[in-house]
Each structure stands twice: as structure tokens, then as C-alpha cells.
Image (cartoon, rainbow, N blue to C red; front, top):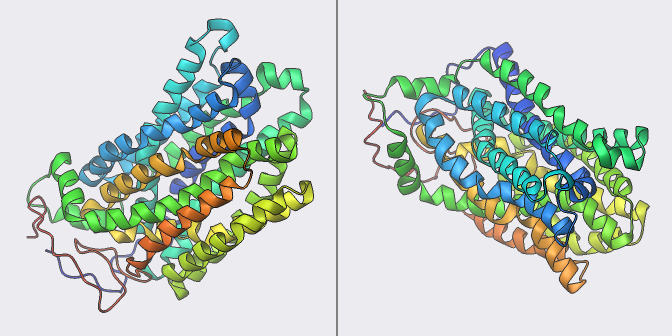
Length: 457
């Protein structure tokens, strides 16, 4: 085993290198979430183009959810590879695959042209996106966390989620801009394709930025101390068998995180259209206003977590969402202006979770299995509860007519998150160096896990 990590920064990279790492990580995440923003904002047009029959909106929501089914497989594949060959190479490949798959959606023929092959090809591209995303998000968060100074990890890590919200907002805003320029027939015919095509140049910019960086010093230090090169299967086994406890804790926290995330940011435009009769653009405006305000607050909460800790942020967010979900969803049903108020309140309550992901989750694992542990836990939980949230909400609301179900679903997820959070060790200010689990708590238990693939010299 390596020496226990200290709370002091060791071998910290230059500030210019940290800024480049932040930009490279954030733009890749923005590209990933730009796709989700565009997909959510063009639900009506995608339904018309690919699911004109009995499937309708449910088919489009299935297209959204199916990409998440491949995310766990992506996590199981990309995570160990990232711990074996380095973060940089995996992240370069994942951003390229994501941007290509998104752009190709904009080139697909419609159901009217090739029949069932059209939705089949859409689903295939969503599967490629999901598989690639299984390595993108965990890798980008790990990459950024390992580059950031220990005492500023919340501040710098929050910019990854700033990229998340920027991508979502840009996707929504672009579709609204096109709606204002083009008429309905033009949007339905070809206008919806333009936002998807824009993903390719965004991805190429991210690819260039990532190609200019080396792997983080934290990873390079562990990599140098290996007596032999471990296989991907060895690293996968070490992550699952040796670190099942943080994997389970993260799984529960991600249930709460992503049920709220995909209910508020992906399902909401369709929900507002069906419950209070807002137009496609009206629902998108509500979400866009909330997203911009949320984006502005992300760096504030990220920086705040460096001094107060990650756990207080999560407690405040989970309890707040549990208490206010039902009244705010009721309020959103009272009209356009109230919908904005309700959405903004829930969005701001959610931000303390979102802003601290990159500081909290990578610090739950030691360096040699950080990418794999993060990717496996995050993506399995997201596939089961996050990406399916729009589909579950749409089905239950449509089947029962209970318009407050999304609030109840969010509350149940928050309970699961609170149970998991109770077992989380505080890591604010802790070093990510070495092969011990980081901890800022003096009485924290450190698992002494055998690591046959990674003995120290």
C-alpha cells in the first residue's frame, strides 16, 4: 500500500493546466447534455418523424430511456480501461462517439421514408450514445477532480456541472431560437435536425482540448508504482469486490440525484404541456429560465462546499426537495407564471447535489479504481432510476391521471438518497492521492483491501 494520503496538496499541477483540464472536461460534458437538452426540446418533432403511430410520445420517451440501458455496460468497459491506460485516451474516444451519434440523428430518414427502420436507427444511435456516456461522465468527473487542488475541489469540480447545465440550456435555447425563426411546418420537416448536427463541431472542440492534456499527476503517480500492468478484468474485480460499500452508497445517492435531474430537466416540458396545456415552446421557456438560474448558482454552491463540506449540501438538498416537491408541483399546475416559480424553487433546491458531484463521487474511491468504481455505480443507478424517470412519469401520469406523481416519485427517491448519505464519509479537503479511500474525517475507517495488481515498490 502507498502512504496514507495527507490533506496537503502534493505535486499540484500549474494553474494554467488546471484551467485547461476544467475546460476540456466541461465541454465534453456540455456536449453530452446538449444532446439531452435538444432531445427533450424536440420531443414533439421526434414523435412526428419517428413514432407517428400508436407509440406516440411514449416511443420518443423510450428512445430517451433506451440509451441508459447501455450506460452500465459502458461503465463496466470504459471504467477499467480508464484505470488501466489513463483517463485522457478514453475521454477522447467517448466524446468523439457521443458527438458523432448525436449528429447522425440529424441525418436520419423519417418513418414516412423508410418505415420501422427509422425508429430502429434512432434507437441504435441512442444506444451508442448511452454506451459512450457510460465512460464519459465518470471519466470527466474523475479527470477534473484529480487535477483540482484538494481544498478547492468543490469550486473547480462544479464547473463540470456548469457544463452540464450550459449544454442543456444551449440545446433548449437553440430549439427555441429555431422555433422563433421557422414556422411549424419547417420545424417539423427539417428544422429539428439542425440542433443535432451542431453537436459534431462541439465534440471536435472538446476532442482538441483533451488531446492537449496529460493524465492527472494523481493517476500518473499510482501508475508509476505498479510492478506490473493489471488487466482490465483485474481492475474490475478489485473495484467490485474490494469497494462494494462505496459503490452501494453512491448507488443510493445517485437514485435521488437522477430521479430529480431527469424529472425536472428532461420530462418537464412534456409534463407542462400535458398538465396545464402549455405549448412546446412555453414548456421549454419554463425549463430554460430555471436552467439559467440553476447554472448561475452551481459555482456558488460548489465553492461553498469546500468550507462547509459535501454532506451538509446534500442533506439540505434532499430534505428541501422532500418537503417542497408536492407543493411546488401543485403550484406548477396553476399557470405559466406559477410554473416558472415552482420549477425554479425545485431547481435551486436540487443544485447543492448537482454542484458537488465532481467533488463528492470521485473522492469515494482510491486512485487505482476511481474511474471504474465511479462509472459502474453511477451508470447502473442512472440506468435503473434516472434515464427511466421520464418514461415512468409519463406512463403513470397518463394511466392514472395523477398529475402529482412526479413529486411523489422524487420524494421516494430522496428517502433512498438520505439513507445512503448517512453512511457517506466527508471528504472535503481530503487528498485523492494513493490507494487508500480518501477521507477528511479523523476517525474514518479506511478499508485495507488486498490489491494484487497494484503493489507498491
